[in-house]
Image 1 (tube, rainbow, N blue to C red):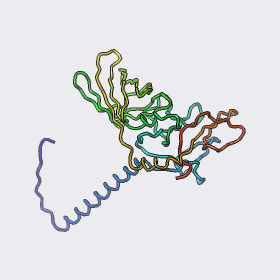
Image 2: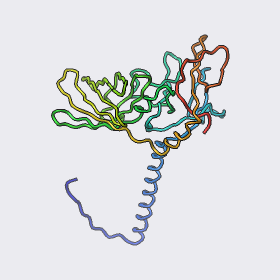
Image 3: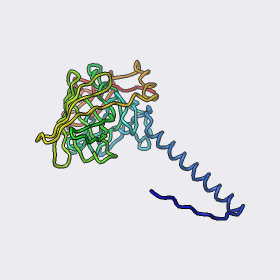
Image 4: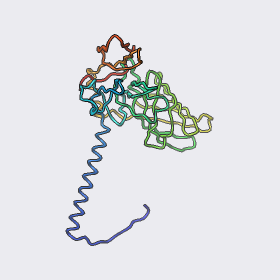
Amino acid sequence: MGFAQWRISIIFPNEMKRLLRLRMIAMAFCLAWEASGAEESKPTLRPVHRIQVNGEERLDVLTGKTNGAPAFYAIVTNRWPSGLAPIFSVELNGKWELRRRPARGQENFTEPLFFGFAPVDEPNAAKLNGYWTCHAASEEGSKNYPGMELMLDGERVAGRFDPNTDYRFAFITSGRFHADELELRVEYIKDSYVLNGKWSNGRIKGTWVKSDESDKGTWEGERAPASAATQLEQEKIKGLVALYEWRRPADDFKRYELEGKYPGKDWIRSERPLCRIWKRP
């Protein structure tokens, strides 16, 4: 504050006891609040249930909506775990489905429903998916520290900047990750930028340039190491099961089944799985 303020007061014994009790209650409340927040962000394996909405089957992690057995289990967390694939609940034109990416234009406003592992033929997803802490510097010497949540679907990259910072107004409009080379196109207020980087040993280093080349510089990003909880779930990798999308042509409804499950002759299965999750905890 730039200055100190001193106050001398006389506190009687009873008043001292009351203040101490109030302080202890306040400390306990703060500790409980911090523990609650830590628990929310901790990656945990939770049941995913089937629910009915206007005659359409959907999936939800809010178990209070149903008393039925879980369809499967997945990781649910507020913080994007390193290496895991986010799965989003999307509704377009009155039809619901799960996607590896949110609806276009909704990246900054949509949270994943749950997280799983990408299909086995997408090893690059484990390199890129997750929260990245970044450091950017301009040629003039200014520095910024944006955070990014990135996801990979094939070679296409989507994501958003940390919604808890001023960069929440920036949009990742497109991206590509191929042969460990990353390219992101970003719009921030009225300006657009291109970020290029090379992935190596869990880090990305590269350059950025404003579209009119009036400003440029370097940047690098580092992904947080997998948490103890995530590592514990990864140890269960033998229990992972592919999750497939099934579509019913008659009404274009979609449902999701574990590998080996068959919903009926009216349904057509997607060629590739959406992700891999757990049949049981």
